[in-house]
Length: 358
Image (tube, rainbow, N blue to C red):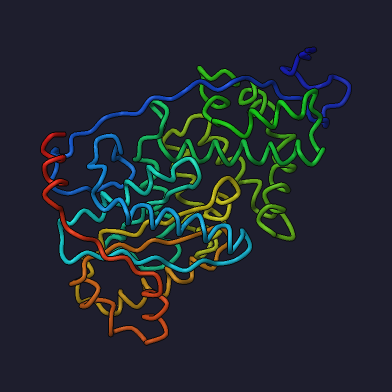
């Protein structure tokens, strides 16, 4: 095949868009963790399924994973989805760990955003954007040295580039091959050691020319009439995909928590351009008996389910549910929260023995 030099834009037309270079994707390795290293599972993105008890609540893991898949198929990208409620009789039943296993089971199909509000937060969309970006910046990605935030940002940038090629708005010597590569591991494009790293280099070198077309592709995918502020989002997400240094994380945090909640909506909908988004809401024990906070959280999460491509899984203990949510909510809100409820069980003897053997 003929492979042109994609490194420089045409000298005769500084406004034209050069062609990207492409490559293949190598397999990735997974880390390991000790199930007894801590008595609290703080991060649902830091658990290795290979080091979990395979049979423990497997039916619930399958039920949640299947429900996510079915909702995506039935509702489509243009409709909201019901919120899923996961409850346990008390602390220690493994809610967060189960969320981690759901994350492991669905990781290649969805984008998972863990969300843990702090007591000082003003409950609203801005807090969702702020805490969501922070959590993803701390979570390890599948590629060594990468955060989950960088991984997701790379996926969004690669998808927008793919949409331009697919629509014929970006010159490309081999569109089919380009779309194949852009549909696989985005780390190969934005990693210094990636086999398709010249695409990332090319994109960074010509971002001035590409920023507007990429923003237009994002607006089209999100169903917006104009690209508006999306050019700034594209620039910031490209920085996060390329380096994900402290400055790019700060910039994303500011964008996602700004605009009186509009930033959070834009961020989640941008993430959904790559893959459906699952917001995992956990660690609400600090809001015990705070009925006003419970009402605000319930209304916020149900509001998030109305965003295209966004789903929500709420996880809490039954005592927190009864004291903070439950009958303290208007019946309509309570019915919507409990419409899809899953109760976690405890360890069986076989499960306990398998855990010890780990």
